[in-house]
Image (cartoon, rainbow, N blue to C red; front, side):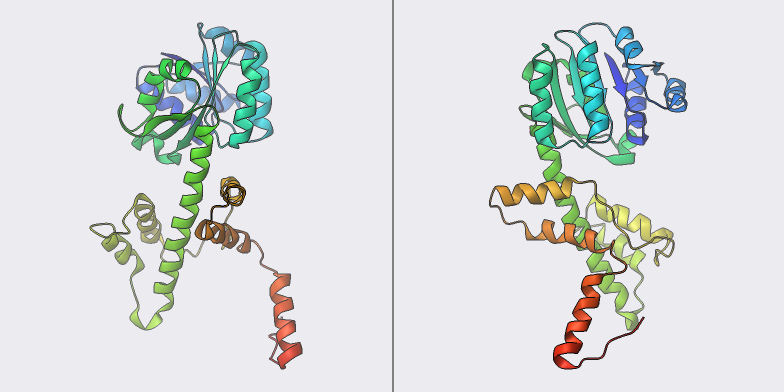
Length: 301
């Protein structure tokens, strides 16, 4: 099957390679000419512009957009809407807000196009392990694209699913990432407690490996924890600063809108924000207040 791929970052490039290896013809485009040439080296056909990519595809066309959420995705979808024809499909495999996906689906439908939102999980391991795909969109478009999803997923009948209408794929991925925040925070806190029990001199890499087999807390995230600790238990080269993609924030906002309590996910997001404040004004004020009402000592800088 033919597919256009727009966006050849690490994940987009790996997806392109997996599709080519699965026997699909991929026409690839990225603003980086080097990235396009690298994709061509793995068997994709190179395109030098969106217009060239569309020109190389046979109708009905399908173009997978693998770009950061926000303006990069919005601008590309709008440009493709002008270039594609009735019956063609735009797939957004990035981390867009599901409300934006619902809007875009309506926008492209006015031109007779299909819009599919594919929440995609698997990260840099997807080339080897396959991707988990949470797909929203019309039945007609999803059914036609089934060979693509079956190739990208870990197996034809596992790791992907049509979860509902446009927007539902990105909504499901948003909640998935919120759960991921909570799980990662629990592992981080647990291993921190282990590390601080100095008198036991615990081998954290050994414990991670131990828990990977038979334990009720085993998971792929624990596998990755073991891998990280094997390399450097002190994590000495890593700054205590944790970014977020935005989907944890959206999950918390949605939980509030739906009156659903989500304390673990919410606190895990707040901990990420906390990690970025190396000069916390709030903590300085807390120390000052303790001194004011109780005469407690202040640690000076």
